[in-house]
Amino acid sequence: MGSLRELTVPVRQGIAFLKLGWSATWSANYEARRKSFLRERLRLTLWLSLALVLTVSVQELSYATTTGVFAWWRLVINGVVALCLLAGLALLKTRLGERYPELLFLGFSWSALLVPQVGNALIGSSQVNINIWVMTFLVQATLMPVQWGLHLISQLSAPTVYITVNTIFGLGLDKSVISNPALYLYLFWFCFICDLSVFLYERLQRAEFSARRELEAAYQKLRAERERAERLLLNILPKPIAERLKREDYTIADQFPEATVLFADIVGFTKLSSEISASELVVLLNQMFSMFDQLTEKHGAEKIKTIGDAYMVAAGLPMPRSDHADAIADLALDMQQAVARFNIEYNQSLSIRIGINTGPVVAGVIGLKRFIYDLWGDTVNTASRMESHGLPGAIQVSEVTYESLKEQYIFEKRGIIQVKGKGEMTAYLLTGKRSPSVIAKC
Image (cartoon, rainbow, N blue to C red):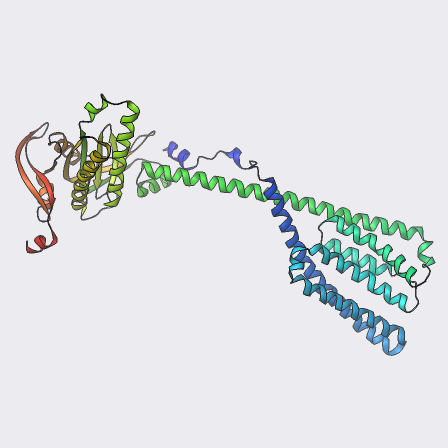
């Protein structure tokens, strides 16, 4: 059954990472993902920074009782920073925070740099706190590693804020900082490493996101192909048989002690084929067999195959049912009505000859290629003979089927007929179904 496995898994290994032409959508989705990541990390950073400020404030409070006014002033500065952090947390929940988390990123950076610097200037100090700069840059690079350009702006803001604040307050610059080239070198390499780390991290994130999207696309394509193959397989085989063949790798042959088989043949089809084109003929045949397929599904029967203009159906398999003969009888009557409607719609004069028989059958799948679910046994042969020896426009059944249906359906006894390969057989013509009230009286 190697070809079945090829059918159920039709996707080649090489399609896993196909480009699907959606780069614009991919880009937009990545930007949304990056904004979401920045919001989540910014929320974490603000809470950690708030905890850090509170921890430092507790320490400052212990110093304030002994060192005087300067320590109390640092507590005030810490309080302002804490308020800025709380404001950032509140803004994260607003529409502004949803759409522009980058602004809150810069707001966090500027509040951490600006507030302490203004606080120092208010008490006349031109001192720059390099530790705050380094801590701010480090926290941003490790907890919010997105958009290295934002990090660069934050880093350039530090000396800009320092110079601007001191200039506004008429303070000079800290000469210990200005005259220290080693400090410049240290800050340069520290900031460079932070920015490079963010740049490399984001490249990795882009690559991972791209790979995931391509994998999802390949999976969706694979799933669509599998579903298509599954539908195709179920059009060829009954679902229980298809499931068994996917699990097993050997011939399936099941014995059913009782089932009912129907053969139908379109009378006048050969003559029609000489009067219209081949394409028109196929269209008409497809229309009629499609109607038969719908009726077969409606009555819970199993279409076995079509051979030319012949149609074969069975009931009671692959899932056994006690009313298999009733289902086939109802199907046969509906098929007659369908042909009558077909003739009116397409202005034709076709009729259908149907033969039915009931008995034991063997059903299964054999062979290696182009396999079908088929039936074998004397019951099948007799059903075929009932059709071929039947009358145009009539439903001919065997005596066995008649005995199963005579209480619920109306029959005409045709009598004994000579059947090729079988000899003399008693046949009946199914003409209709009894009403429920008549059945109850019987």
